[in-house]
Length: 279
Image 1 (cartoon, rainbow, N blue to C red):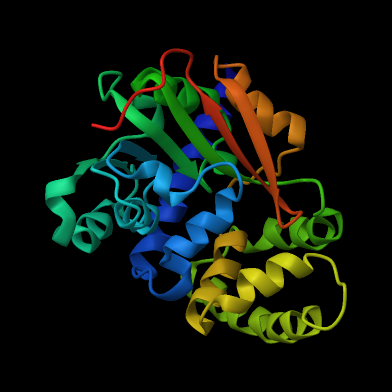
Image 2 (image 1 turned 135 degrees about the vertical axis):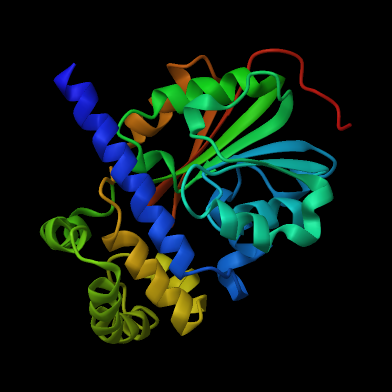
């Protein structure tokens, strides 16, 4: 009971942290919000073409970055779930697409079971939830038989040196007010720019991610990426086995993983049943 209450408090604080983050960083311009980045996330597991004409669920929509990617891929309709104060930003950013989006200001574990969607995504979200199983179960229930869930998670493999630096730093930064953290991020950004440049000529740790992702972001989105690492109250870095188990223990089958740039895990699983045709 005590552990559950602690998890609930951490979960609520994390929601509040992201609410503040996304009300301060509201836009999704450039490569950061592009369909190319979505393709990079899932690599060989699935592509934008798989979403054409489909009904899709996005869990933890924030400012609508992933929802916009899904719409650009041709999704017929997206249900966007966001429990934080960023819900207002989400609604504003996607107002031009309001006829293709349903907005739900609820937590992931409260997703209605009757959505009958073809795909459910939770990108960069589950690793911030102390007890993610309830969210995965809700997504499973909302999927049509044969529907797929795609998730993206921080990985433990390939991040040993990074975590040795980040873990003690986060013990401080997750307690900082927004203005102080934003100022710190500007300082951290200076050596980061130098490191990205070195990764273009030397085989350094996280080199692929630095060249192919961070190096393609504009300065504002590069700093946002750093802020995103330092801000939330809770973050878990998953091993390959833990990442796969998130889906298999809920009942997903044909679970496939992609070790994205050697530092994170993209995972796709299928709800048993007949693969649905596009509607």
